[in-house]
Length: 265
Image (cartoon, rainbow, N blue to C red):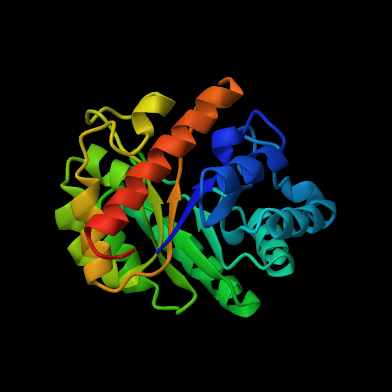
């Protein structure tokens, strides 16, 4: 498995700052944030001028471009994201499901939309992933399975985030077994409590919360998952730089220990 973090952790700073500290903290790669409002990293309206800089930073800091997060299902925005991913050499685009919880019509609309986007991803040769998200139409294991049963494109998979599954009232370690064969990306973070939001950025750092992430990583390893484990910490845009670095370093140490404990490294 490859360790990275989403550059949104450094959303208040230039993109190069995220690359610099990903390398210094010992990560294998990075997930580039295209999350409007949370960062000014991969701004899709200007992707043609930004992608060469992303490629330069990846070379300079010897980091693999593991993924991009672009949460919107809006077709034109996703088309730009896929074009940018091809040009940059980013293999995975992660998006959110949107929609309304426990609304069958909304879930059907989400499935139809994701199916069309998966066709476009197949056209571009990239992988589109969606994750269960608290408060959205896809928010737990049963709704994730509905999506995976409906969309069989090889260019589509699940982005598994244990913190959302935990906050949906499930045990992420148990839930993992039901979907692990279709997981193509992992957004990983901890969570203390089952409230709606993930908590403050420090409490999202792996090892700070209630989720058994060691067992979670062990299940991934036992099922042969070799993709990215990208730390996703939101809410740190106003944080001082040392605080962002501390979160990145602490979480990386915990993830490395998990990989070593289960024989993945």
